[in-house]
Length: 277
Image (tube, rainbow, N blue to C red; front, top):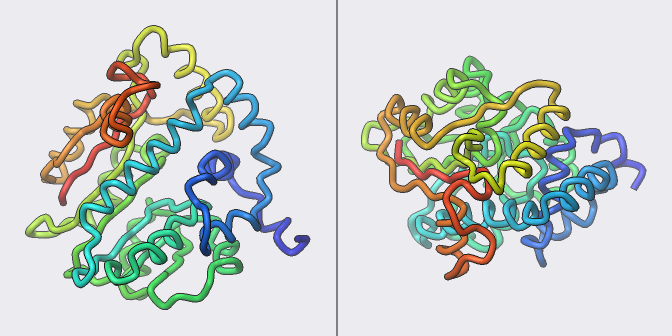
């Protein structure tokens, strides 16, 4: 599709992640979206990383499946909520969710500084789905853009920050989330963060270093790392109620009923946190 070629000059990390998570989107509009994306630019990096870190695709799948798991807990017919994807990337999670939970979602807002042109071209029309071209760290503009798109501060909202925390500073992280705070903590935040090397078991350090070095080469900069204590401190600054912190060992056991990849905390390099704000 020649029309799409120039529109897919996007951050390789975005194409990288979706290329390894496509198996989650089988059937329906989400699969159709994936079928129309050219992943060739990500293939060399996918090959390089998966040859060295064989568990990487499963790690990314577990991260996404855990987000789905947390969403299932709050998506109930007759009690619709809003969903905000901060730095949504190329992932068509919105299409999957609207198809699977049509009566449990009032609106979905995808915010990203790229990829919105591709999604406007390929997404089916749906009045509940709002694509906002913006930098999530631009806190002067973002609240107004959300409100203009129909965001209702009084409506319960799930905020998803998948794969974002390594690329923004503490201050940007906190400022981006201030808008979503509520007096009664009715909004649920789900995010992942990358651990520092000191929190990773010795056997997993080579893989950790490869991932970190590869990503830092792609972005031509350093990534932000958080210990569990660091992330809990940020949640305290937001005055949030932490509902859970899950290592990848916890996530795998919770989702699959047993551990086959991750047997100790710190394996998998990331953790997930769920917090009400």
